Image 1: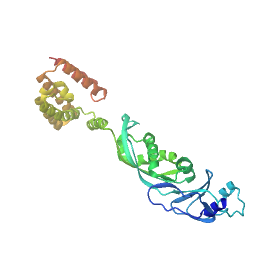
Image 2 (image 1 turned 135 degrees about the vertical axis):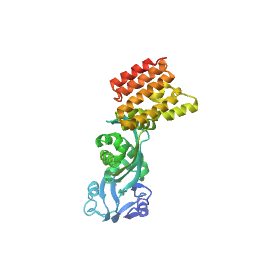
Image 3 (image 1 turned 90 degrees about the vertical axis):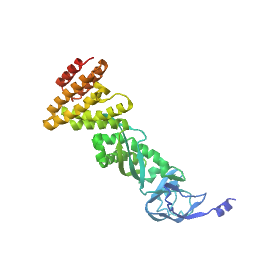
Image 4 (image 1 turned 30 degrees about the vertical axis):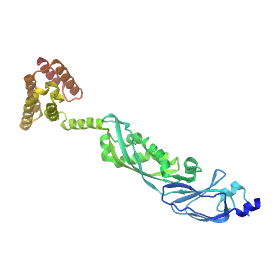
Length: 356
């Protein structure tokens, strides 16, 4: 019976793997109970590596080339099996092929905003996405850490793990780049380089090399983007009170229009103080601000704006709850350095006189 089994058994004399382009990273050569012919040939193509595994232990590793399988070309396997130099019989071993091509256009991205520390805004939640590419460089390590005895291990099976490695290092990349959020969008290459730098060691632990990382977009959630837009607008006017009042008026006009169309009240710093009835006075404020700006300087514009605001407030009257709301707004502007102590005190006294 044993003789018949031996006769039926086929001996493999050619070992090779032709990649099909289906995203296979590791491929186990189908043995089907057969044995490898001593002196057979092993062909490892460019962008491949081959590994011989004996009884669960990685033995010999082969790079690109054509090999005749003998005790000279299989030194580790020879040692494990205690073969002598005269060994010329078929032998049993598992053979795995690995693709060392670059796996390109792999996608990474934040499914949820990632919180980072920013020197301008404090805690910021950002979204980012881009591409990365990697390749197997250590098939021995990749076999023991990832693919194991799988007959076929693919790129798709590994994607989730690698994407997670990328995302967990975004905060580190931002910190090491030293770039504030406002500069990230214009320095995407530098940010991507930092992300590659901090994530590469984790790839190496899996027998991989992180070849490249690209950043396609970095952004804030919508609600934070609105705050950023407002801060940018404030930054444009700086400490010039005349320009500040013009900026606030320009911001309030569309809201007054919306309030009029919908039957509601206005909003904004001026709108909070005067309500919907100040629509006509608001136009006077705008006209006087522009005139003062043309005639010479922020100080004159600030005085004209303050005078016009007081006139508009007097025209419609201010209720106690409106006074409190406006004072809170002014206090916030003072805390941010937009209003000085004297300007705040002056406007506070003016508002208190207008109570109805």
